Image (tube, rainbow, N blue to C red; front, side):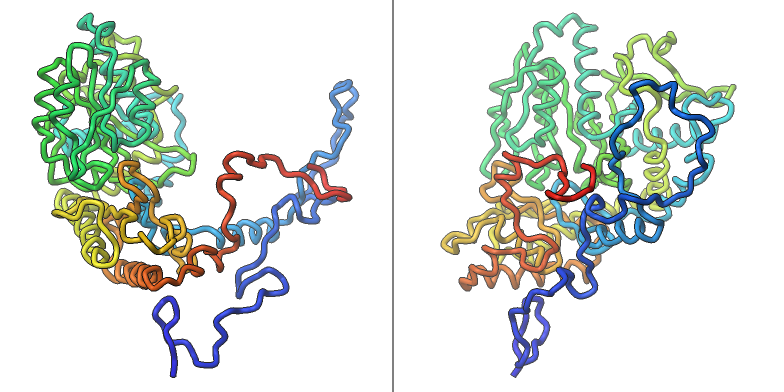
Length: 522
């Protein structure tokens, strides 16, 4: 009779469970690809260059004496190298990417097509204003809809990411206190224990001291603790809503009231705006400043060190202090208000050299316009529905960190259900790799022991969620059945096995060296 393998498919009775290692290091159709520096292309170049018409005699002792140290590859060699490397990576185009708090969602190709239009991709920030009217109109339209969706009167588009947006918001808050002559006395920022790590870091960077606010047993801000710490020395509070535990702060209006009563401002970390977009306007909740991660809510590409965008919406109390530049429209068309102009006299300055990242603006507005108001509302509804579906399907085997009531955009489990198994959250996550799934966020938020934070986003279908849930249930059952070896050595089938992460963090090797006896340059 046949048995069931780890993904629930029949296994032939004569199939050997443990497979011998291959002789080449490749697995199936996956190639074993070396580093580009370990190839044999050191004596060639992939392009033909003309002979120089002059010598280097005028360079003196600056003439290169050693090999340049760059391998030469032909076009097919270069292409194959990077394609093979890409096959070792997980990607949202391959399967669900369940990282909680990071919101890895599908980026519609329509957005990419629009961002590549010549009128957006080939312009330069120093062009005359008359030649970029379409780009400025797009920025103005994006700003309009960001203000409409949040219920806020002003927006700064130029911040490049979430943490940069936090910097923008806190600098606007600082400028507002300086205008009232209160900056020297208001030196504290209150931050809940479950906040993103960038919140206290940004506050400290701006020069504030950070005071931690406790959370309740059910994962929300402890309003009583907050009230006890508010006073004339507090500049602002920083609250994420929905919060990092995947829960809506039900006391959010009371939090805003207490904050404003103390003369402080309410900064909201808008990282999770995708859970409430089209349903709740943060301005109606009393928020004074909030950054919006365009990748999280409006499907621009996520991270990777490339160009990003984290616009900041501001309340009426902070609007005058927004950083330059911003777009205005009058009888002469669209133009930029800059710092030196009278109209920007209260702006706290600039956050970047020019106007921000045009490609992200185009992608975000494309997403908004293709969805419409009803579609954006459905974004929030589906994000919350998908997260609650995962929570409901796994809660009989795994332990939800906050079991009572629904979650918002992400389902959070703790390690309670692994007690007695000798298996850790890390072990479980590594075993997910063997099943073809990227692990969820581990050990965050820190307020939950052994946290497993899963965010499916609204772009996953029920079929893909079921496939993910099926694998999670099989792994959970294996863990409870005592199949410890499956987890302790995982991943077994990844291109690389488990690393010594402690050693990698403490003693990283940051420079490649050629093997002894090799004639390759380092």
